[in-house]
Image: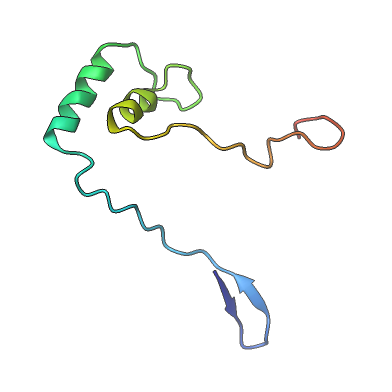
Length: 82
């Protein structure tokens, strides 16, 4: 979103995050299923871990846990990561 200032400059501004409207996503049944799924593995709390707990939760809730590639971490023309 952008705003036009009094001097005529057009600048980008931060907007509020609006979560998706999945009111029925965390039902008591879903929470019980998440607890079962988490208890069956040795999960980690760090998203970088191969056994990240979000993967177990995502499977139960049928949500993708794939991360998009950050442009800053993609290779530049010279082949380095930074």
